[in-house]
Structures are given as C-alpha cells and as structure tokens.
Image (tube, rainbow, N blue to C red):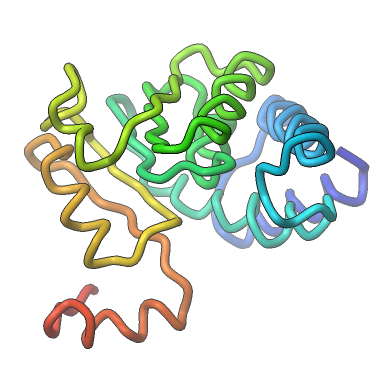
Length: 191
C-alpha cells in the first residue's frame, strides 16, 4: 500500500474510532495486492482502481470493527470479494471468522486471501446462506453475523438461525437501502 493510501486509511479509521495497527495495514495491503492481481486475471470485483477500492470498500468495512466481540464466532453472509469479512479479519485476526459465499470463484479467492494474508482463524465455505444453519458449528453459534451484500429483510431471515443467544446482527446498508427498510420490512424500525 502506498504511503498516501496508508495516510487515507489511518485518517478515516481514526474518524471511525477504529484502531488500525501497522500489522493491520500490512494485512490489508496484502489483501489489496491479491485482489488487484486476481482482478487482472479473473474478475472478483467490478472496481479496478486501488484508491477507489480503499475508499469505497475497505474503509467502509472497518466500521463494524467497533462492534466485534472480544472473542467468539463472526459470520459474514454473502462475502463476495471479502467485504466486510476479510477486512474484519485483517482488523481482528484473533477472531474465529467464517465467510459464507455461494459462488465458487469468490470462494476460491477468499480461501487464497485467507492463506496469503494470513488469517489463521478464518475459513471460507462455499455454501448457500440458507443451508448454513445445518452446518456443524454454524447454526446457533455466531456471536455476530454481518453482511454488506444483502437487503435487510432477506439478511435478517438468514442471520437469525445462525445467531447464538444474545448474538448481534450487523447489517451494512447504504443510505438509500436503509430508507426503504420501513417499506420493505413492514414498518421495522432500527435504532
């Protein structure tokens, strides 16, 4: 990661209240390098510009770091290119992290990212989220279930059977999608 990108990352993380260590920056740099390399050969994400990936994806995915548990299982549903799961793993490599992705190509990328960064407590599974609760250790076992890729009503239905008692859901929504929650979720209001 270029010094200017590190400066942007550090400034934005500070605004979010997220502590980004030198080790975290190193892991994020390895992830970005791998993502750009894969994008040249086998597209993993539509975005190709490193600065835009950093600003629109990586920094955004640091925000849930404030709500990660001290220990326990974190599940990312619909991981795609690793947003937010891999970013959260780079931030907190000590947490058990399961990245659920139904498509083979993104799952292969996620497995390679976990190996290269490395994130020894993480694993990527090629699995439909609807089937995840039947997998050993996933159903009813997550302290946090997070997603950036799914509309809220769908995500909540998929997350509920994965949560441990007193677990938390982190639904990353755009302002536009969040504005439709009341309409789509039958008046559901989140605070």
